[in-house]
Image 1 (cartoon, helix red, strand yellow):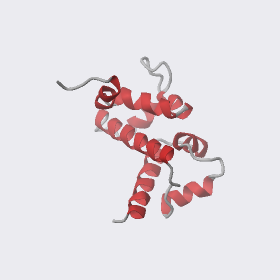
Image 2: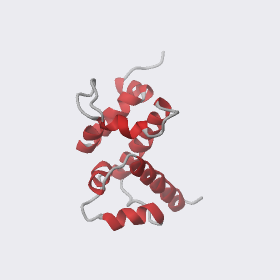
Image 3: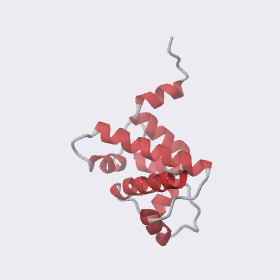
Image 4: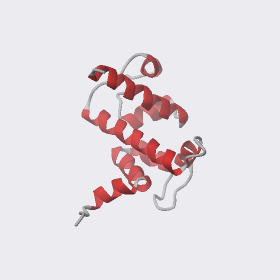
Length: 130
């Protein structure tokens, strides 16, 4: 598989996650850091035949979304709808709904991922294996 095929596969997987979380177009755009010029039809193309635009920031955000989705699947293995629900519930340690935090900035995506994935948080802590 060439890199364009891989990018299209990542785009489709990401869109499937965002759709499962029931995000609207504005939320998808904010979460991925896409420009305002990307509208509803653009997202329809992402679902079918077009890859997300290339860019380091977009690529990092896609990676965070995929890792958050994976962590939510691990946390709620028997109920696939719980991930979207968890994102919308107030969270004591985060002090805000995870989805709101994720929509604020890339740093919000990092905080939510760190909350869900202890191995990611471990990397952030600066701790080292002895």
